[in-house]
Length: 148
Image (cartoon, rainbow, N blue to C red; front, side, top):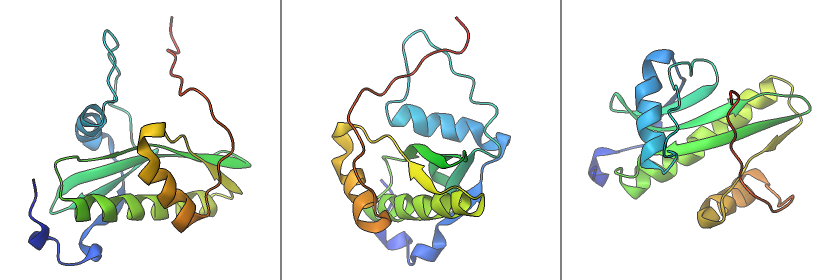
């Protein structure tokens, strides 16, 4: 686990637009956060332009998918490196959400939707407290292949 003392200021964590070269690290974070499915190989090679990444000490410590659509865009699949210290993870979450909201607002999106699994109640509270999030509905988180 990373040392707390190494992060001196939240400004040390930088948010950048992902490039395709960052795809292996995004895939690693996805798998570390349980986003992997038996028998299903996901091609992560094309992530440029649709993901933001949190960088700290030249390392990707988190990412989020930004999906502009009108009138409601989406922020999905936020993955944070579980090996990082709590402070690094917390700052990365907030900075990724802030940058994602800013990107969607700049593209003319009026609202942001996001799926929050039940086991991530703390994340739900961050969306409520810091971003004015409200519960819309309950349901299943579904994933389907585009090719059968």
